[in-house]
Image (cartoon, one colour):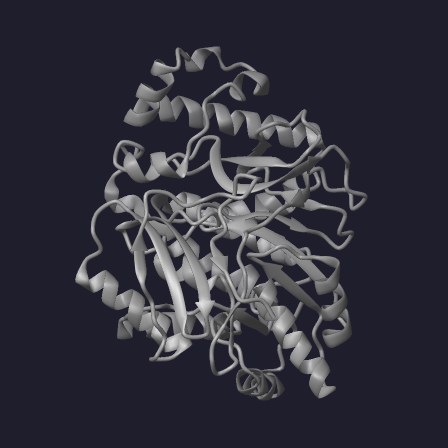
Length: 445
């Protein structure tokens, strides 16, 4: 850890949060210790937090009162995890249809609005509390630390960029935030050799020690470096998110950066859910903040993850169908952490698209764009040719002129002004045999 990072983490960040009356430093300190608890200690802590959440939810959240009563469930009868597993899951459709009724009696001024494009193609708007946000940030910082990363280390982000209009104040605030944390962000919704050449030049100046990004963006940058027979020197680790990490990706990163890659699994609804440590024998779940189940744990096959946020008291997500499938592990990691493991994540069904100019566009572009279009309940993107992209949408109401303009404008910026973008309202989006929707379908390579 650099001296700057040490000062930032031990003094400046805690002082900032204390001045705001927030508890991020407390949670970060707790998580640093609790990861070494025994599995039994972690389970006991998790159960206490879960009981508090359930009591709060049935007392203050109208939708849960009604939902559990209709199912004939009395929360006082939930005495074990087996009892808890009998609660009916929460779906994205329920969140979108009953958003207000899912909010508790926490004052609106203490809630933060969020949105997700959805790994399965269903945009969702929701709320979290400031306290829950601090828990999430603490978990994310711990997850990154397992790769050796600390806040304030020079980090290159191959990430998304804000779409639509961004206020001057918002842009300036984010600029200061990035500067203090030594983060350099390269928007990768369009990927060309020119972009990667400029990124390489920026790396010579910025001297990053870590890279964080979408898997597909990391792969494209790695392939560019190998084609050019060059590298970014001094990289200690690469942290990949948003898409599955396969053996091919690990090999590419090792060849291009001479550094290990760490798989991180998360979502907009919960931020960091689980991440790899240096043993890379599964993804450690942040069980102090989240409860992760699979819908059919005894099947021996991947099934859908159900996630409970233990600290979002503003809009509780209890046994939420996140849309990804995978398997949990019964193994204990040799690293010594007592945190449970995810054995595998099927991941998001997002394919890469291409432009007539030869640019590569990650499938993540579309969830990022469409998450804030409130009329869209579900969507699917299909690239018919280099000149046409069809957007199929399930609508809650007709698209406004403003939403149509935003969609066409942002897609044209990436794919070119001549691109045809027919928007087709449909009644439903077809699913794969696994139950997941194909969010984007490209032309292939």
